Image (tube, rainbow, N blue to C red; front, side, top):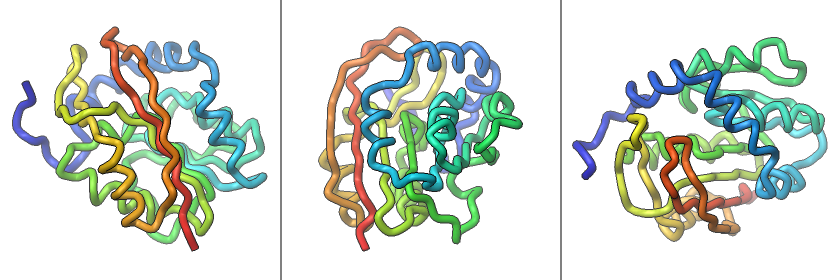
Length: 206
């Protein structure tokens, strides 16, 4: 059963998990290789585009974008996660959440792979609006989220706010992004829990 709605900043318990588990979590996520949805999204980007890896975790996507010649900003509230990317050519690290970026910064691609689901539900609309505001005209956004209606903590204490595809697609459209491409899959979380996931891609119009 979900508890009271958390505050609007980074969830302390979730952040503490990633700080303590950074090395093991990064190795686990990198061991899966580049997923098909990453390759599909990367193919949408213009050569040399500025890319934001939003909630970069262990950094596997940031590394893959940099290897493809993109100028990558890896953003994460966990200093332990970002430390793995220190000194990597083509990758600039930034500690914090989306509010840590300069308001004028724009990206040709934003990759948010199962990071925004850790945002407290009350803060999700404003967070999504900030994310959309950092897309350059014609830029692409990728969202990976758990699908559903729950607000819960997993067996490791991490906060998860599940979202419904139609609601997220509508929110993206209202923010000037569209049309949203949607794919669904079944997966297993780091804690071993089976999960329903969705991948949404949308382009900034204008």
